[in-house]
Length: 142
Image (cartoon, rainbow, N blue to C red; front, side):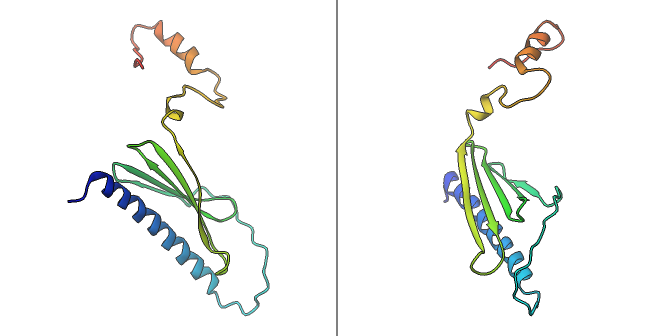
């Protein structure tokens, strides 16, 4: 019988492996276009927010997207241990294709902050003070 932590770890690795295979498959497809001229060309990548997907299994959330360089991104969020891990897959020639671990972070304390780099017109504390005066609204206590 597989323990829950083993199953969660296996699910995470399956997501990473699937992402890597998909990214490398897209790269291989783009490098087999039959262009007889091997001279590198400049390619621009227009910004589009339509190239992302997301899925979850109750313990992990996986979100994919494309960055401004055309690289594929994978964000993995472990909702039980509250960790974030980010990966980038790049394509091109065989020597430039790779999957790189960009970074990771324990986001537990991040999720407890009421505001940081927040340019809203009203802070959380100001709204909390305003709402406390109203009888119809009760805020959750921390």
